[in-house]
Amino acid sequence: MTATTRCPAAHPDDPTPCDGPAVVTVLDQYNAGADGCEHHGARLLASLERGRVYTLPHAPVGTAVRVFTAADSIPPFVWYEGAPRTQPSQRSRAENRRMGVTA
Image (cartoon, rainbow, N blue to C red; front, side, top):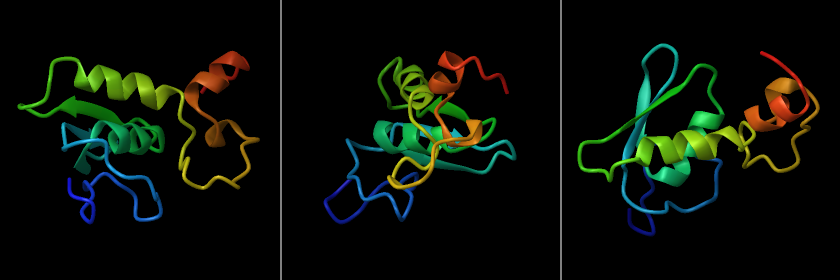
């Protein structure tokens, strides 16, 4: 991605830059999806209920696993830094597990 172009998985309100080329496809529960770099793929996946991630053909082995693992510790819509994180749907999956919250 260039400095002015970001991957399709980058949310318009997320100010962070891409960390490389698009290497994964992130799908929601209805199979709508976006290709993205590892960074934005993880952030998008963390913001979806029942989302899935798949490695694109040219990506290194293990890319989808890295994105899936990273998404586990990212709260939904992490770019909204002032957002409350008091409800299970507002916290990362890892944080909910630590707190004993089940979905």
